[in-house]
Length: 291
Image (tube, rainbow, N blue to C red; front, side, top):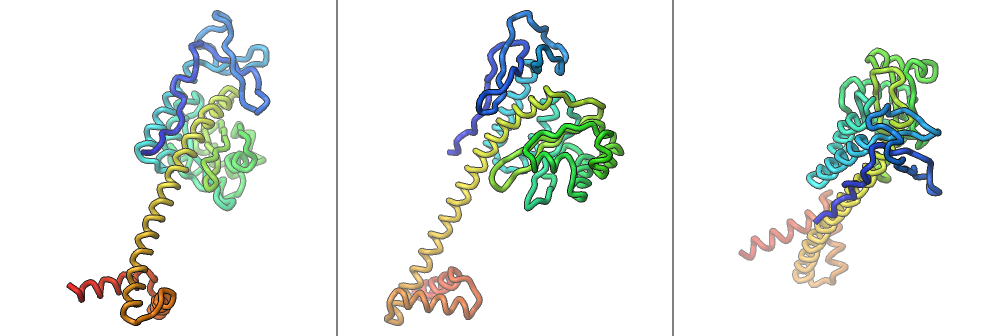
């Protein structure tokens, strides 16, 4: 039975507002809950006090629900493409200013959109891949969140800006995403309003992606182990058939195991047929003759 990936079920103690007060020695964000009455529930998400970023409890609860849903989907299927599609749908609910989302995966330096909420963002991503430059590719390459106002990016990323403005996108944020050694890229968020993404949105995305990456990695390891087991099972079956064929040749020709195997290899090369298939044909032919 597959182990269930780690989730964040009920990770947050009751508190109306959380503050990002700094980072620990490992670089993780440190949160604290102010005393009751210090802040009012429902205050502006981007409001700062004393240099601290205000994070609303409702948003943390939204992340928890999203992660539980994602984990359940991974338990049912485990397919990466379906999981990434769900991530796109969820992050639009988790981050208030996000109207659309996509996931870019980069392979051999070339980006491709693995999941998206709308065709329009698929096209905007494609403009970046074609140009070989853009905020999503920069986030994937640097491992840092890239947050831009589209109009201000006109000089730096003209192809991206042209397509984004034509689609009505005014704000953009891209966060690095790593699934495993073969799958890495970025989660891209699109906003239809100017000045849409704030520091608190970056914090929410980091929180969400930290748990998403852990869940996806656990699933990726499980899928890899399952595939390896299947390959091993196939190899064992193949080996058994080859051993049977060797035994038949040894008995029929009075040769040793090594010479019998060599005869099978030579037949495989002459016929340009896999060794397993040659052995299987021989075993089937002898079995049929003896029935």
